[in-house]
Image (tube, rainbow, N blue to C red; front, side, top):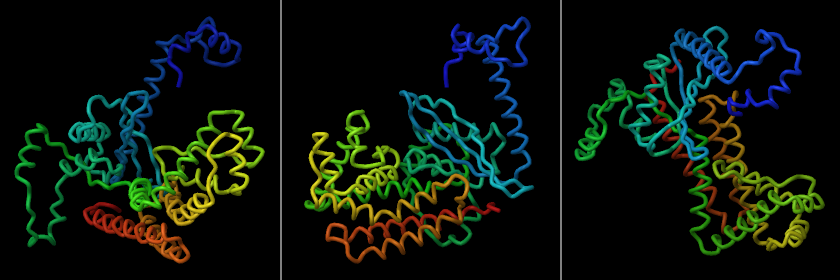
Length: 370
């Protein structure tokens, strides 16, 4: 991850010159930046060529797409997934990680996606592309998804009303017609949104629940910040707990759940002694029990996310059984909850039912999936 100019730094070249290796240039001179850059380009071209040969023999593939920002720069990443015809093992490869310039509008996203798919001759082979729930991705696939004649065979009598103004406006906005494959929204991202948006809205809808939720999470945030930034605070934590506290990530709800669970692993007495030592407001008994009950209710959701975010063992057929088991476990927790949490299981189940209906609807147009 260092700049290519590193290979020309005197200190770097001095270290490398002391390593006994084969393949040095005549006279023992190490390659300069231009030579090394050329080597990287050639290695990339060879890898790309091998991938294209592999894809040429495949009949069906699926892809994923994501946009993110780092160091004030936007990037688009595309991965491809397929079943090896010989071994029936699932394979994957990253086929794009490129700079995305300009606004993240639906038409520019569609143009980039189609260009990447065409560069690997994937058009017509992709059974579905999975993305997050971003409105720009959703609109790109809604506007440019290929028409499926079979999809409307059973809906001949259904009347569909279209906003003519929107159609004309979109035709003016997009001078080209791109063709994108069927679209699936990421189930893991949807579950994350349920926890980070819908459940938070539910908890802050009642005045008493809102006060406890915000004060409890605020005190935990102060504790996480203090321990992660101060070595003295971290050493103080070691006196009360053998495990370090986790700092949640803003993009993954799992990390927030794990961080809260780690806090409640400590007895309330030890926790408040630590807060006093660090000059942080102590957590009340009501707030402590609220956090424990929050973690109890949402533990099945976290377990479901761990399954659905699996790298190698999560398949499309895993989704619906996981949602079924999640709803069963959530409903089993209804008894014994406080009045603040009593309706939360029903909310989660309702959201899961909505997910199931959407998944069932999305599965219908995919005719080519082997």
